[in-house]
Figure 1 (tube, rainbow, N blue to C red):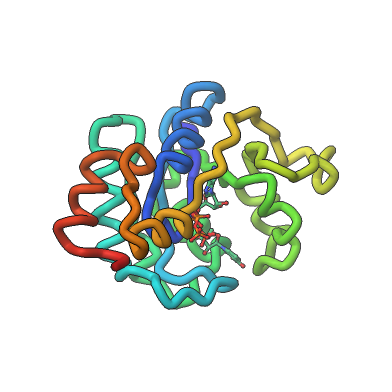
Figure 2 (cartoon, rainbow, N blue to C red; figure 1 turned 120 degrees about the vertical axis):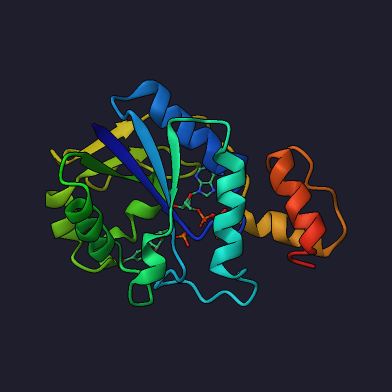
Length: 190
Ligand SMILES: Nc1ncnc2c1ncn2[C@@H]1O[C@H](COP(=O)(O)OP(=O)(O)OP(=O)(O)O)[C@@H](O)[C@H]1O
Ligand SMILES: O=C(O)c1ccc[n+]([C@@H]2O[C@H](COP(=O)([O-])O)[C@@H](O)[C@H]2O)c1
Protein backbone atom coordinates (compact mmCIF):
# COMPACT_ATOMS: atom_id res chain seq x y z
CA UNK A 1 0.00 0.00 0.00
CA UNK A 2 1.14 3.57 -0.64
CA UNK A 3 0.89 5.63 2.53
CA UNK A 4 1.40 9.35 3.17
CA UNK A 5 3.13 10.34 6.40
CA UNK A 6 1.98 13.63 7.85
CA UNK A 7 4.36 14.72 10.63
CA UNK A 8 3.58 17.43 13.12
CA UNK A 9 3.54 18.66 16.67
CA UNK A 10 -0.28 18.83 16.39
CA UNK A 11 -0.49 21.23 19.33
CA UNK A 12 -3.44 20.86 18.78
CA UNK A 13 -4.59 19.19 15.56
CA UNK A 14 -7.01 21.44 13.64
CA UNK A 15 -9.13 21.41 10.48
CA UNK A 16 -6.19 22.80 8.44
CA UNK A 17 -4.34 19.51 9.04
CA UNK A 18 -7.45 17.41 8.42
CA UNK A 19 -8.37 19.12 5.15
CA UNK A 20 -4.81 18.69 3.84
CA UNK A 21 -4.76 15.02 4.84
CA UNK A 22 -8.12 14.46 3.16
CA UNK A 23 -7.02 16.28 -0.01
CA UNK A 24 -3.89 14.12 -0.15
CA UNK A 25 -5.96 10.99 0.24
CA UNK A 26 -8.70 12.06 -2.15
CA UNK A 27 -6.58 13.44 -4.99
CA UNK A 28 -3.44 11.27 -5.05
CA UNK A 29 -2.49 7.60 -5.08
CA UNK A 30 -2.02 7.62 -1.28
CA UNK A 31 -4.38 5.02 0.16
CA UNK A 32 -3.85 5.95 3.79
CA UNK A 33 -2.55 8.95 5.71
CA UNK A 34 -0.69 8.39 8.95
CA UNK A 35 -0.41 11.27 11.41
CA UNK A 36 2.96 11.03 13.16
CA UNK A 37 2.84 13.01 16.40
CA UNK A 38 6.29 14.48 17.11
CA UNK A 39 7.15 14.97 20.79
CA UNK A 40 9.69 17.69 19.96
CA UNK A 41 10.37 19.45 16.66
CA UNK A 42 14.17 20.09 16.46
CA UNK A 43 13.53 23.70 15.34
CA UNK A 44 10.72 24.70 17.70
CA UNK A 45 10.98 25.88 21.28
CA UNK A 46 7.43 25.92 22.50
CA UNK A 47 6.52 26.64 26.09
CA UNK A 48 2.86 25.84 25.53
CA UNK A 49 3.56 22.38 24.12
CA UNK A 50 0.95 20.03 25.52
CA UNK A 51 2.19 16.63 26.72
CA UNK A 52 2.65 14.30 23.76
CA UNK A 53 0.10 11.77 25.13
CA UNK A 54 -2.56 14.50 25.21
CA UNK A 55 -1.73 15.69 21.68
CA UNK A 56 -1.90 12.08 20.51
CA UNK A 57 -5.30 11.68 22.20
CA UNK A 58 -6.60 14.74 20.37
CA UNK A 59 -5.33 13.41 17.02
CA UNK A 60 -7.00 10.06 17.62
CA UNK A 61 -10.30 11.76 18.38
CA UNK A 62 -10.03 13.98 15.33
CA UNK A 63 -9.51 11.10 12.89
CA UNK A 64 -11.66 8.41 14.49
CA UNK A 65 -14.37 8.68 11.81
CA UNK A 66 -11.98 8.14 8.90
CA UNK A 67 -10.79 4.60 8.15
CA UNK A 68 -8.04 5.92 5.86
CA UNK A 69 -6.41 7.94 8.66
CA UNK A 70 -4.19 6.48 11.41
CA UNK A 71 -2.28 8.06 14.29
CA UNK A 72 1.22 6.94 15.18
CA UNK A 73 3.18 7.41 18.40
CA UNK A 74 6.36 5.86 16.99
CA UNK A 75 8.44 8.95 17.86
CA UNK A 76 7.50 8.69 21.55
CA UNK A 77 9.87 5.75 21.80
CA UNK A 78 12.74 7.41 19.97
CA UNK A 79 15.43 9.95 20.99
CA UNK A 80 14.39 13.63 21.17
CA UNK A 81 14.28 15.96 19.34
CA UNK A 82 12.47 14.08 16.62
CA UNK A 83 14.51 13.81 13.42
CA UNK A 84 12.30 12.78 10.55
CA UNK A 85 14.87 10.66 8.68
CA UNK A 86 15.33 8.43 11.74
CA UNK A 87 11.58 7.98 12.02
CA UNK A 88 11.17 7.22 8.32
CA UNK A 89 13.78 4.48 8.58
CA UNK A 90 12.10 3.08 11.70
CA UNK A 91 8.67 3.05 10.03
CA UNK A 92 9.95 1.48 6.79
CA UNK A 93 11.72 -1.26 8.79
CA UNK A 94 8.54 -1.96 10.73
CA UNK A 95 6.34 -2.02 7.62
CA UNK A 96 8.49 -3.30 4.72
CA UNK A 97 5.35 -4.22 2.74
CA UNK A 98 4.28 -0.55 2.37
CA UNK A 99 5.64 2.34 0.34
CA UNK A 100 5.81 5.65 2.21
CA UNK A 101 5.77 9.28 1.05
CA UNK A 102 6.51 12.26 3.27
CA UNK A 103 3.81 14.95 3.14
CA UNK A 104 5.08 18.50 3.48
CA UNK A 105 3.71 22.04 3.10
CA UNK A 106 5.44 24.16 0.48
CA UNK A 107 6.41 26.72 3.15
CA UNK A 108 8.57 24.07 4.84
CA UNK A 109 10.55 23.40 1.64
CA UNK A 110 12.71 26.50 2.17
CA UNK A 111 13.90 25.10 5.53
CA UNK A 112 14.07 21.53 4.32
CA UNK A 113 17.78 21.67 3.31
CA UNK A 114 18.53 22.35 7.02
CA UNK A 115 16.88 19.11 8.10
CA UNK A 116 19.03 16.18 9.17
CA UNK A 117 20.09 14.16 6.07
CA UNK A 118 17.47 15.81 3.86
CA UNK A 119 19.01 14.32 0.72
CA UNK A 120 18.55 10.88 2.19
CA UNK A 121 14.88 11.69 2.85
CA UNK A 122 14.47 12.63 -0.83
CA UNK A 123 15.98 9.31 -1.88
CA UNK A 124 14.31 7.23 0.79
CA UNK A 125 10.65 8.28 0.49
CA UNK A 126 10.43 11.44 -1.61
CA UNK A 127 8.00 14.25 -0.88
CA UNK A 128 4.38 15.02 -1.66
CA UNK A 129 4.24 18.81 -1.29
CA UNK A 130 1.01 20.79 -0.98
CA UNK A 131 0.80 24.52 -1.67
CA UNK A 132 0.72 27.05 1.15
CA UNK A 133 0.00 30.81 1.16
CA UNK A 134 2.93 32.97 0.03
CA UNK A 135 5.24 30.17 -1.02
CA UNK A 136 6.63 29.61 -4.49
CA UNK A 137 7.55 26.41 -6.25
CA UNK A 138 11.12 27.59 -6.81
CA UNK A 139 12.90 25.10 -4.56
CA UNK A 140 12.99 21.46 -5.68
CA UNK A 141 10.60 22.50 -8.48
CA UNK A 142 12.04 19.97 -10.92
CA UNK A 143 13.29 17.38 -8.47
CA UNK A 144 12.17 13.90 -9.55
CA UNK A 145 11.42 12.86 -5.96
CA UNK A 146 9.17 15.86 -5.26
CA UNK A 147 5.56 15.89 -6.36
CA UNK A 148 3.38 19.00 -6.00
CA UNK A 149 -0.29 18.66 -5.10
CA UNK A 150 -2.93 21.39 -5.27
CA UNK A 151 -4.73 21.82 -1.96
CA UNK A 152 -7.08 24.43 -0.47
CA UNK A 153 -5.32 27.26 1.36
CA UNK A 154 -6.43 27.59 4.96
CA UNK A 155 -4.85 30.25 7.09
CA UNK A 156 -5.41 28.42 10.38
CA UNK A 157 -2.67 27.56 12.84
CA UNK A 158 -2.32 25.80 16.17
CA UNK A 159 -0.83 29.05 17.51
CA UNK A 160 -4.04 30.92 16.63
CA UNK A 161 -6.11 28.25 18.36
CA UNK A 162 -3.94 28.29 21.50
CA UNK A 163 -4.15 32.11 21.64
CA UNK A 164 -7.92 32.03 21.20
CA UNK A 165 -8.28 29.61 24.11
CA UNK A 166 -6.03 31.74 26.28
CA UNK A 167 -8.18 34.77 25.48
CA UNK A 168 -11.47 32.97 26.02
CA UNK A 169 -12.39 33.11 22.34
CA UNK A 170 -14.44 30.25 20.88
CA UNK A 171 -12.59 27.71 18.69
CA UNK A 172 -15.79 26.18 17.35
CA UNK A 173 -15.35 24.88 13.76
CA UNK A 174 -11.56 25.32 13.91
CA UNK A 175 -11.19 21.85 15.39
CA UNK A 176 -13.55 18.84 15.31
CA UNK A 177 -16.22 18.89 18.02
CA UNK A 178 -14.68 15.92 19.84
CA UNK A 179 -11.34 17.75 20.01
CA UNK A 180 -12.99 20.94 21.28
CA UNK A 181 -14.80 18.92 23.97
CA UNK A 182 -11.64 17.28 25.31
CA UNK A 183 -9.74 20.59 25.28
CA UNK A 184 -12.56 22.11 27.34
CA UNK A 185 -12.88 19.22 29.81
CA UNK A 186 -9.14 19.02 30.43
CA UNK A 187 -8.72 22.81 30.43
CA UNK A 188 -5.85 22.63 27.95
CA UNK A 189 -4.06 25.82 26.78
CA UNK A 190 -5.65 28.14 29.34
N1 LIG B 1 -3.69 25.53 7.97
C1 LIG B 1 -2.79 24.67 7.50
N2 LIG B 1 -2.86 24.21 6.24
C2 LIG B 1 -1.95 23.35 5.78
N3 LIG B 1 -0.90 22.87 6.47
C3 LIG B 1 -0.77 23.27 7.73
C4 LIG B 1 -1.70 24.17 8.31
N4 LIG B 1 -1.31 24.39 9.57
C5 LIG B 1 -0.20 23.65 9.75
N5 LIG B 1 0.15 22.99 8.66
C6 LIG B 1 1.29 22.10 8.46
O1 LIG B 1 1.04 20.89 9.14
C7 LIG B 1 2.25 20.38 9.73
C8 LIG B 1 2.06 20.17 11.18
O2 LIG B 1 1.61 21.38 11.69
P1 LIG B 1 1.88 21.92 13.15
O3 LIG B 1 1.58 20.82 14.11
O4 LIG B 1 3.18 22.59 13.24
O5 LIG B 1 0.69 22.98 13.20
P2 LIG B 1 0.74 24.54 13.14
O6 LIG B 1 -0.67 24.95 13.08
O7 LIG B 1 1.66 25.04 12.07
O8 LIG B 1 1.38 24.78 14.58
P3 LIG B 1 1.99 26.09 15.27
O9 LIG B 1 1.05 27.23 15.02
O10 LIG B 1 2.05 25.68 16.71
O11 LIG B 1 3.36 26.32 14.67
C9 LIG B 1 3.34 21.42 9.46
O12 LIG B 1 4.11 20.94 8.41
C10 LIG B 1 2.56 22.67 9.06
O13 LIG B 1 3.24 23.44 8.10
O1 LIG C 1 14.44 16.00 10.79
C1 LIG C 1 14.65 17.22 10.92
O2 LIG C 1 15.79 17.71 10.85
C2 LIG C 1 13.45 18.11 11.16
C3 LIG C 1 13.59 19.49 11.24
C4 LIG C 1 12.44 20.26 11.45
C5 LIG C 1 11.19 19.66 11.60
N1 LIG C 1 11.12 18.31 11.52
C6 LIG C 1 9.80 17.64 11.69
O3 LIG C 1 8.81 18.27 10.93
C7 LIG C 1 7.52 18.06 11.54
C8 LIG C 1 6.74 19.35 11.54
O4 LIG C 1 6.85 19.93 12.76
P1 LIG C 1 5.83 21.01 13.30
O5 LIG C 1 6.27 21.26 14.70
O6 LIG C 1 5.98 22.19 12.42
O7 LIG C 1 4.49 20.39 13.25
C9 LIG C 1 7.84 17.46 12.91
O8 LIG C 1 7.59 16.09 12.84
C10 LIG C 1 9.29 17.74 13.11
O9 LIG C 1 9.95 16.78 13.95
C11 LIG C 1 12.20 17.54 11.31
